Length: 257
Image 1 (spheres, rainbow, N blue to C red):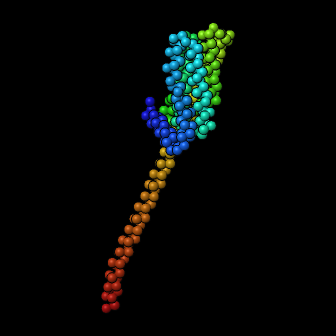
Image 2: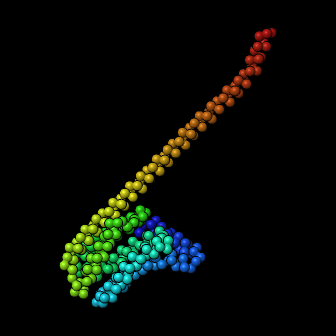
Image 3: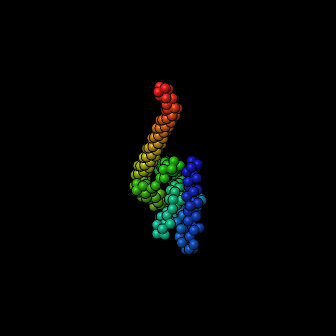
């Protein structure tokens, strides 16, 4: 993990904690905490979904999936309603989303098409994490949200087969979802590359400004040196003239006599 990205994440967490501590009203404190608690709860989803599926308790598995999916729906809504959005919450949300998506897809990897979806979701996670480590501050796009919606439907339809409920075009829908996932991955990669280009341009501008500043300082230094030389020359000239004046006077006196 990039050290700077990790330190920035910790710094955002500290800022969030300080904001909560500064809040004197207990109700407002709770309002600030609730959205992030809902977000963080999705990190625990593998501990509930995978074991219940492996033990064959499909109804309970589906119940857990629905419960954790609901937290993804309400954390953002509550954060905006309570005016408690934070950089920490924004950065935590995509991490928890990916953990939840993996925990839901892993039990279904017997379906080869869903293995493709799992791989594509992993690629998207790598792109976003790499972008975050570089400090590019990745955010969900409209295509990314559409991808998540389609992936959720594919997963629900796949779990329905466990109840002997089949959807005629489920494989075609999963393939369509994989296509959208691929396009979303390209979109996130393009955004990340654009941010890299902007950062490089800003760096070049700063370097040019610094170089110009150094050149200007160098020019001023040369001018000041020349001025000092002129002043020293004038002083030396005046000193010579002052020394010559008495000699000139003596010569004029001697000529008279």
